[in-house]
Length: 464
Image 1 (tube, rainbow, N blue to C red):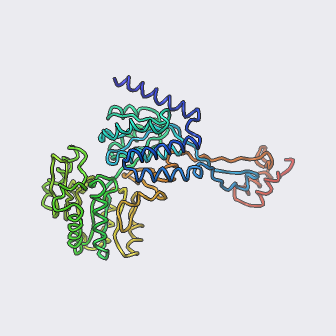
Image 2 (image 1 turned 180 degrees about the vertical axis):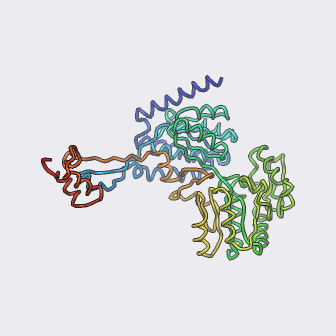
Image 3 (image 1 turned 135 degrees about the vertical axis):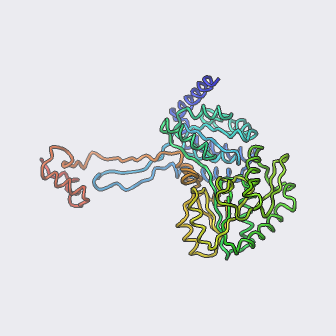
């Protein structure tokens, strides 16, 4: 079975390589036609459409500009010549998407891959089987199925895909699988983009607009899929004196958002499956953590719902502070002075996003300089990913590579250096045999001496 699956996959990839080699994906018209098809699909399917439509429209608007070679300066020592950087497609790429935003996280990378002129295989997450089936059914209706394919399945199918040679692999998910993807890619020296996650910190100063801060933290945490998002706030750090005020503000906002019984709220997302529900339940029931719950804690395993739950000063060595939560649990860690948050954050792995709420511009500058993260947002959460002019990606264990807007195009392109010379301007000093006069000119050229360069361009020393 596995052997047959592997042979079938090899044939699929070979067919895609044939289409790419024939130039089927390179033309601007083909790229634009596929993007318009995805735009129609998003509108008609009405699935996670806002960001997909925004990405498509942005790519269509800028496609020709991105494809146009960029002229760069040609050095005097190669005169007469012209130089440019040309973006060329990588070839046949594999995109492995995640379950938490299964439509968006499948289609958004595809937009970049298509815009860059690649043939694509998409492997949707099997943890969101309904969306996986939908993509397998819908996508071929709107795009060129000979160059863009969907492969469904679980671990076995993904393993078979990773055994193939790709020109790039784009993976969205967790670090454990990210390491497997990277190890498989290394066998073929295939470059990767890994969109992972991490524990995204939120530092809250005491001088903030408290109500707005609470709303924006709640929206980024529980409004974004009930915490099941890679950029979801993972924990808060604030001062001991300010923590009670922040907790009170969060309680008021959460009651307004989800009511007195949040498990009955239609605005609160379910946990994706029983495995993740039990994982979160285990974090909550940890004997070192369970008595630290100061708000929420309700859960319904039948509905796969967990209410927004806030903890106060959980031990830093507890499970909830050692792994990415990816759910509706939010610890608040207190410090004596807000600047103590820097050392705490830097003692952890680098996060996909780091958040700061403050009116203090000096603190903002210090936070930006001291904290390394995939992205940073001041006085809000999550919304930085909507800016098509900003790269979205991680650093360290939160990932590598970035996409969105032009960065998506570049993620799936090779920047090829092109230098075009004329037959004039022969430098005699370049060629052997090397006389003392030639060596003198060459030394001058290597040192950047303008006179030596001019002499070389003019063909000195002549006749030697």
